[in-house]
Length: 355
Image 1 (cartoon, rainbow, N blue to C red):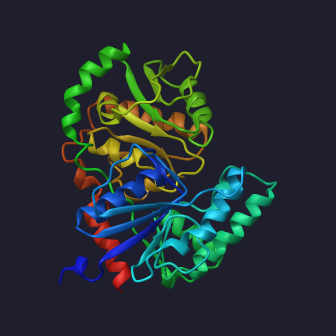
Image 2: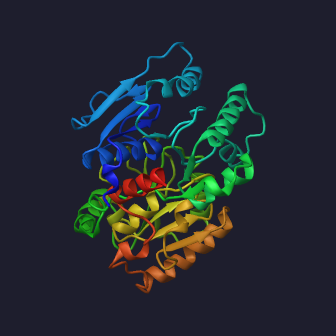
């Protein structure tokens, strides 16, 4: 039976609709994925990038701010957003809406994040967020966590019954990340001034502290001098082993030009960097705090404990494998059988709603 004919449309709630990483990108995937199936989509948001173009199945409702305080507006949006849904359609919320929704998408928890970054002194907004998140989980019909790591946080910190919790990994863009990117390897390395003897690690980061840059640089200081770190970020870093790339849209080519992608994240509920790099034929070096380590086979993903010594040891191990050409990813999709494309991911969410 065609699952997509069981309801006409779907509501999607998230406070920011724009091109970015993390949840912003995931929400755009949902909007495009559901609408591509011919379903109507009502998007309720607070902030909208007006340059975005959606097909005719998509209607965007923007709720205006009520105050000059951004954190307060975000809190108020969560309470006001469900008033704009079409009640006959199921609702997927990717923000902390306190009223009942069909699916609560969880890409990370506030308590888990604060514990990971060792934030001991909570602000009034932290406390209000924790309370709202608790209500979000309690009232949702189903909670979809983006990794087992996140699912465990929901169970441990919010005392939620495991029966309403389901792990569905976020989708990967199999079309834009592929082995074809390897055709750009030599060109990109030449542009960066990296020779074939050097070992290039790519580090995409929108938050150097949370992504573990200090740990990476400390480990590199103890490691083989052939290692070079290319940082894809708007924030430059002054270090002799670093190449600052700035903000880049050609991440597939950068992955393919690199010898490995690396993250030493303090908190990374999933981390699309890992799967995307694998699809481009490039192995990954990830801390054990990265949720994507759950879905990548061990011969393509080298894990380390979240400290510089463990990372330095892992870099040495990687270098041996690299020099002996023991990490060749000829069929990367088979290394991640649990991760699906956007269309199949949307089908999985429809199945959850219909149960």
